[in-house]
Image 1 (cartoon, rainbow, N blue to C red):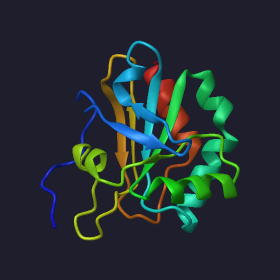
Image 2 (cartoon, rainbow, N blue to C red):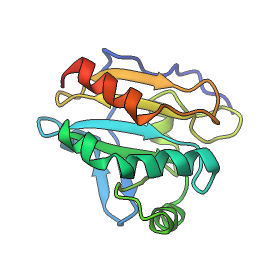
Image 3 (tube, helix red, strand yellow):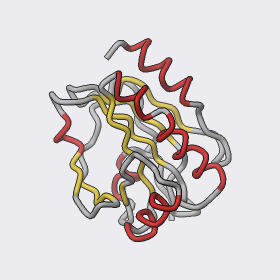
Amino acid sequence: MSTTVAPLQAGTEAPDFSLRTTSGEFVTLSSFRGQKNVLLAFFPLAFTGVCTSELCAFSEDFDDFSSFDVEVLPISVDASPSLKEFRSKYDMKVELLSDSKREASAAFGVLHPQAFFSNRAYFLIDKTGMIRWSYVEATIDTKRDNAEILAAIRAIAL
């Protein structure tokens, strides 16, 4: 299977989606419009080393993101029960979203064409629904440090 959609860039309106969280609720991206800025953090698979490190760091810096009025929404193709266990095991503060149908990953252009999971990617979306900053990792075993993401948030001054 192959995807022909390139990753979305800054200046593009974020496509809407509704995904189930680890608490069983659905989160719809457009529900944040006019309310909060959103950081979408696509990650390949729960319980892997880099993903665990990345998501635990989001919990460690939860207050820093909140101080910028940014809702962090990590998204994986894993099923909700797996993500719930992953979140519980590491006592994560952020809800995790299941993109098990791969629709959000495909819409943002980050669905890995051979492996059928998402590439590690970040999209900072402002309160109007526009992507203001994005970054797609070259490999799944690398990630942005929160300091770099927070610097991008400060530079945009959402």
